[in-house]
Image 1 (tube, rainbow over the protein chains, first blue to last red):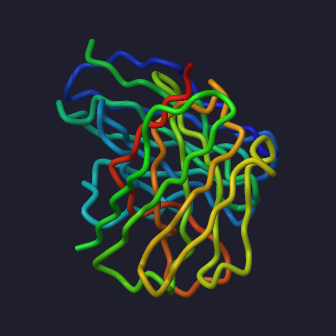
Image 2: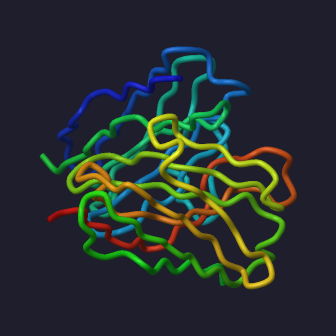
Image 3: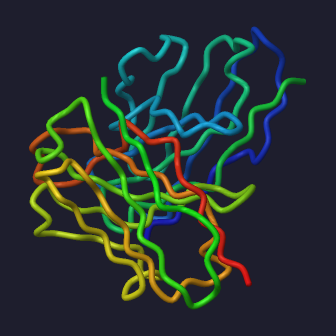
Length: 108
Length: 123
């Protein structure tokens, strides 16, 4: 089983700042099948990034994904008030299709 | 518009069973892998199971194998999760989710999610 470790657990930033969220895998993620999701309280997750770096439809350009192998990053170039939420990475290269434990992005 | 609507959640006693349903609309259901993902209160996401387009392949998280069964009815655009021998730790919101590619030979990330149905296991 591939274990995904996200860091930091909580990130406190202000609107307008840049955020970098990390997702590290215990083994190589096959074909860089790594996705990022955003979840707000009381809502279902929303896909942001798939294939490590491909942006989902209707996702703002300020969200970018990068990385390969075992190290991946979600970058939010300039935080908007609606970006404060919990973010999860997930690998779907091999079963079981595991999630990271999440990074909470909070307003400083 | 893609819609996934879960139902069947509720309060069940430990050791009991429950069957969740997910009604899909707005896309060709029979061409997509489908999945269940759960989230315990205040916790992170946990993938539960995946089923291929024709039901011929099913994958489960190891910890649930033998207790949970995923199935589908393509004629009625429905996904199911049969949950048996329920335990307190199965208490969670259960989401139905669609894989990101049509007609793929393997599952992908989740591009659409339902709003979830809450399962509470308690005496």
